[in-house]
Image (cartoon, rainbow, N blue to C red):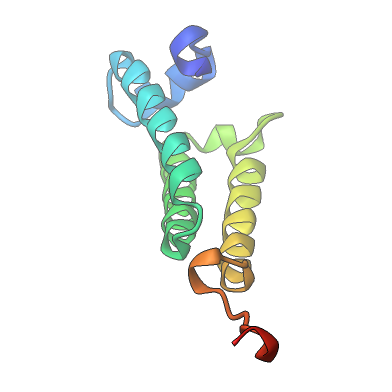
Length: 113
């Protein structure tokens, strides 16, 4: 949302460093909002966590290659992406243990049969 309402100079600089025009910034913000909506709807699909972790690794690699000076900034992508990768891996690993009414293992007591 901030990309759409309050575009940052640092974000513009990173976009320009990749060779894209700053006009792409609102589109990237809209894609991020769509991914947030996908996260809210697909959180039970385990592979979504792996795809998110892969996207964070890719984004970090692009920043490292195209604008490495941002890696040491106060609010750098290394700490944010590392946290998102870790959260994605935690979500992936814990998703197998989440209870679901769809796969209920409860047995009907003998007395009610």
